[in-house]
Image (cartoon, rainbow, N blue to C red; front, side, top):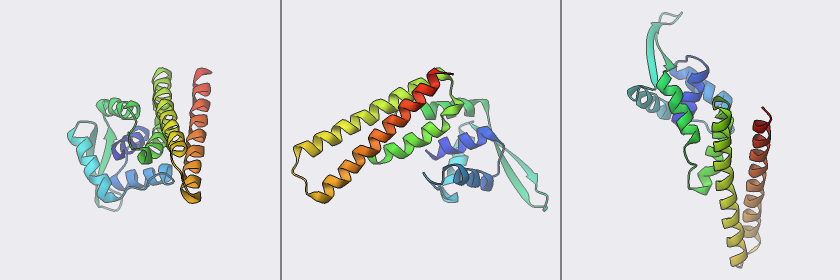
Length: 171
């Protein structure tokens, strides 16, 4: 997911590593806050993969700075990462799906529709699994409340996607 966030921010503007970190925090801090220890290796992987290029220059204060920018391959990789199938782990699904939705404005309308359909199908599947689990077990008060809350989260998420689908169909 870190690569997706980096590419998304570099799609908007050229940034230093500090700038990448700050931009991700400014845009996504309610969903994730990656450390420099996560960002630096990811930037290196993206550069080796040909998705990011670097330019070194001196900053106004006379210090060397490395600026990162997106390549054409990086633009395609960004789209691929957004559209790739959602994570199977239900705990990670909602966060990664929300990040993908937040980044979906870089996609074409057809790509957006594909993403929305994919995320909605996965959310509906998790919702059904949760309902089946609740119905098949004798749960005490606290577990039942937790799973009921989870079902509400998935229902709200499905409603969000339906709103995105509606907006996309009226472009």
